[in-house]
Image (cartoon, rainbow, N blue to C red):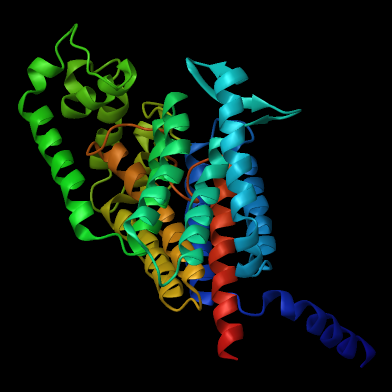
Length: 384
């Protein structure tokens, strides 16, 4: 009887930490995480401790999510400006005396090796949500212009490293906040039309634009090659086009039902490059087929819809903008990764959430989930 009361007392002490957690969101993440562990076990069969390390990274991300979920949105709002300033300052430090690897200067040694651009994935939406919250009810065109400058500064520093994948993620997070804040459509359509016309021009004149010796302005050579390889992977099937070709072969060979767990030939014969990181979706597709892909996509769609529901029900403008932006980060991660592996987008370094191996990205995702949980909890407290 004493033990019974002891257990009740212990649960009563722990329960407030879990009060307000969003059950549907947690369930979606748990299912995706299980899919990630299953795929990592197969694709990382000869990568030493990669499977165990992936599980460790997930546990760390879960702990980060749990701790961030305990921080109320008002406290998150108070750290927005300091976190943004620290993030941009570290990016400037990277540009001056950062560590260069494989032609990219993205890392900084501060006792440990860090990649400051990862901070901006969370700091950027926090900063812009804070900015628009302070101007709620009195937004002017100048406020959107300042928000654009706040976004352009870190984007420019990240692109300069160069790190196109992270730049896309930070840009999408910032643009989503500006859009949700009420950016007029007349400001949105012109750049979209310019982008569509530019893409049509590149596709139409691909042989001339991608000929040897032709150099495009603004883009680095490797970025130009990625776009040209996307348009025609067969131009260099054993070099720059190898990733895309092998990814598409693996996806197609999975068929409707897939070859079965641990039965993927492209995966286990090591034809798929980066099969535990950027191209793990190809390994998943080969073993679980079209049906598995549809279920995985359904999981991500549910995650995004649940995040948007939390955003719509958030009690403050800051919470709504932040929840919507964080949700679209998950969408961008999944869309860009699946798109590049499938051959419809250029290859950039964007992992598949909860599936790909990677400690830094997993912790960033855990922070994003913690923010959504915090906002969901705040909504329930307001209602009660």
